[in-house]
Image: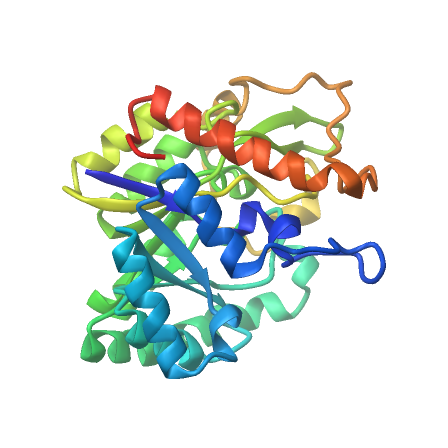
Length: 330
C-alpha cells in the first residue's frame, strides 16, 4: 500500500524556504500553516516536516502539532539537513515529539552528480558519513527510528547500499526517484539495487534536455517526465507491503549534469557502457527538445508567478499520481 503526501522542497518559494531577499522574497510565505492547509486540500496521508520549523517551538507545541496531524489522518516524517554538515539531535527530538518513525536526511551538498566540484572535500565525505551512520544508526535502533538517507544527486545505488549495510537496521533509504539521472543510472536499475532498503520515497520527475556537455534535468509535474513510475513501484511492491511517499517536483533551478566532461567523472566507481546506455535510453522518455526554453519563473526572475507555478505543479502532480493508480486520496 502506498501512502502519498507532501514535502516542502517542491514548494520552496510558496512556503518561504527560498527567496531572493527583501524586497524580492515572497512577501507572504505560507510556512507550516500553509503547508498543512495544502495537505488538507489534497487529502495528503503523509507530511514531511522540515526540522527548522520545529526548533523554535516548545515541546508542548510540537506535541500539539502531532495531535493535530493525527486528527487529520496524516503520518509525519521528519526531514533533517545534511549528514556531513550538522548533527541530527534536532531531528531526533522532532521524531520523538511527533512520534515519527522515519528521519530523512541528505548526505552531502553535491548536486548534479558533480563530485569534482567538491574538490578535496569529496574524499573526506565518505569517511564522515561512515562515522556518523555508525553513530546515528545505533541511536536510531535504540530509540526505534530509521535514519533514511536520500540519494541526493551524489552517490550511486551501490554506494547507498553499502552505507545502509554499514548502519544496520537503523539506516535505510529515502529514494528520490528523479535523482538517479544525476549519477548516470537508469531509474529502474537504481530501484532494483536499493529496493530492499527503501523506507520512504520522494516522488520526483524530470524532463531531460540534452546539451553539448551532457543533459539538463528540468523540473516538471510528477508523471510528465522521464521516470517510469508504474514500473518503478512494481519493483518496490515486491519488497514492501506499505510505504510512504511524498510529491517533490524538482528544484527551481535546472540541474546540468555535465557527464561529457572528463573531470565530471572524478571519484566515480567504474560503470559499464551497457549501464550508462540504459541511463541515456531512459532519459529519452518525454525528453525536452534541445532548443526549448527550460527556465522556470525563478530562473527568468519572474517572482510574481512563482507561487501559482509551484501550486499548479503540485496539483497536477497529485492528479497524475491518481491517474496512474498510485494514489487515491491525493
